[in-house]
Image (cartoon, rainbow, N blue to C red; front, side):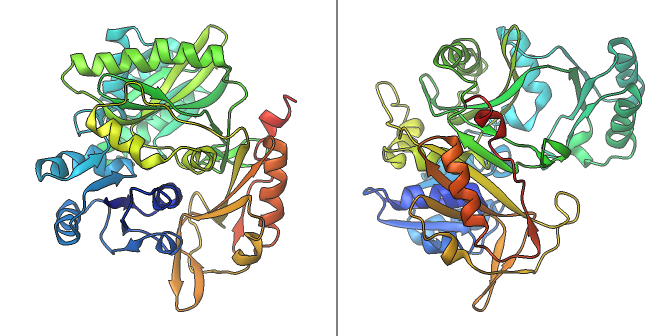
Length: 424
């Protein structure tokens, strides 16, 4: 099987690493890829959102199967375009990708099919949005309806903060079309966790659990980011809670989407809040999480590729996956200035020494080559992943590897895994 991965981040490097190990994979390509992915696949400089270029690449290289990593091409309909051209694609249709592309759509689906989530309202003008905030009070959450590169959510602790977020989106148009409509919702209290399942339209196969760290600073301080680290499994998601999530959130969503004529095939990522009254949906993503994918795949003992193909083909029923008992932990190395203005172009050395431990894997997220030099070329730049007998052991290995990397232009959180380790 000739396989193409679409994307260029740490998630796509993890996917490339896993798929390259499959006996079913005869040739592996990535568009556009990165220097780390280039060790596993042939990288082609075509943007993930260039559907014409990707389709031409598929024809030129006789691609059998495409794994679409990021959300933007999924929401734009890349899977539909490929399937119409006779190329198998892992990832939902544009109609199904609305679960991530429109937060308002997802909230309405939850209301219609009884999926537990926060109370909410949808707004296109600032005055009515502010009236809603005045009635409900703070804390309250203000979200851009569309894709906003992970920057469209404000957890407002005061009414004034909520008003500023509303004005930023609806008056100043900070998020462009993505913020032309807002979802304003109840603030949920509890612990956040990530739940993943493969869906084939009518069957759902749960994957391993994970938790990530969104805030940029130690102790969960500072602004939200795309994720500064993650670990798997998530101790807070007990087997009983996993069953509840499947029964109350994942399965009703799958059935509801089918009833709406939007059958979902791909990976469904539920961001959850574990409240005192049970798990509630914060939001859906329609692709593997980043950096959660980087801790899920090292724990997977089974071949990933057949599972992805089975989801696309609608034959997940009876499919099973085997997981390592080991825990995995990922620490993100980010460029100074992230998440606001990351400094690009600084040199990184010491990766070979950092990866001497066979339990450590380094996934590239935002790097580029300048001859023999490896340079930072993004906000989140490297993912240092380690396996261990438990989360504490994995953490120790990950930070030991980081201490061997020489990169004055980067930084990381030093407390990844603190919540899980504190449970011991």
